[in-house]
Length: 526
Image (cartoon, rainbow, N blue to C red; front, side):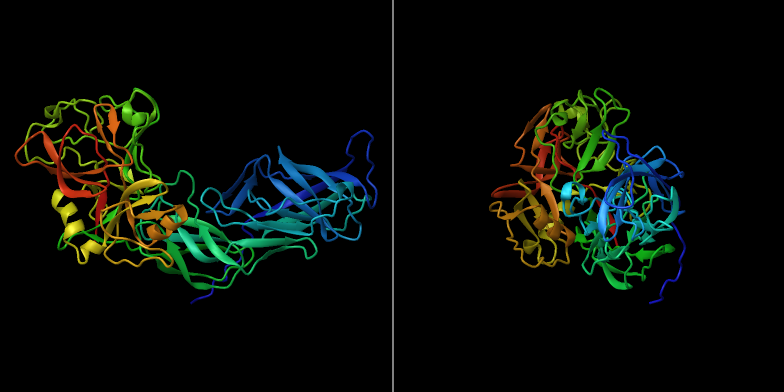
């Protein structure tokens, strides 16, 4: 693999250091050794710590900290406020420089201790940069341009990155987090050997997406210096584990050419020649404000085991809105022949089935797809990215028509939530876990960590979210009812669902259209 040799100072900052007296009672006068000294560092590059990935520039925000080392030990912390880092240092020695460490929002593994009050000062600590989903954790180091002395009032230095900024390019338009394994995620700050040194341990880094960005295929990561990783493993729900080649990383590396990650969707056969991928959670309609339709948006539930059940918003449904702010995840079945005033997505408390369409055998009015974005895919925009609802026959094929279909599903409990577990066509059970097929009981019980392993291997969980009639929700965490896109061919008041409970499972249950059931969207894959 080609080694990357692009080295620039992506994050650099000139620091002006001034030393002054700390006015207390009694006043402490700075001396050469053994006393407390109040110092400040001017940082004139803005007042908010943000790393701009495309340029590598950053500025600070109030509350940011510089950890100060001297003579092999931690001597104090300087806190940023309105353009200046300031704070106390304890027992500075003229035998050494002042060493400055910036770790962004990453806090030390242990709270560092100075020699104040005769305590034994901290000589080293570690920081972990694994979670980069919200902010890129800049790690920088510098020391003053000359050794500490009270005879000098002003110092200068330059903070330089001790890591690399690397761009990742994803083959799919995904909004969910992506994790890359095989990375060094922990660094040691050793005051006896000034600098920031990666540990030998490897872990996983969650890639960062720029806030407000609509480019779902570009991610970034701060990577500690390390050798090239040719088999870094990328994991995310709904996709095959794939390897990617991460270049060798050095200090101040700024790599924008990009590391390519090709994701292949987990496949579930729902017909002889039709395969789909499931959305990452049940469909939810979110109402930020009560009694209003504007502002409503759709999303996949944050976790596969999330369900609203008998909660506020599901019990406060009106005509395409709710009487209190909240989230709805039980929807009525609305056919094409429904009136124009009918709630398009079935968010309605009307119990007259004829209000949900008057034609037997008709299709859904909106299929819960057009105009909604789930995981970065917008409904009905282009072939391969269309979110849709499975038909009655596709639900039947998923459970009864696939190769080894009887070995590909079973009831279970995930994080205390009952539901149906469905396995992809190509399935490997994670080491150390078990799976019992069938629907006789809730046999498969997983905590969050165990389910995460199942999920990474492609398992889908359909929570038993119950159902709604009018504004009353029933049998939450006992019954699972998932709409198909197929209505009854003989009765305009009914449509088909996949329904399960302990000891009872059917893929073609007829339900009154006004009943609120769960919706789990899929998209076709090759």
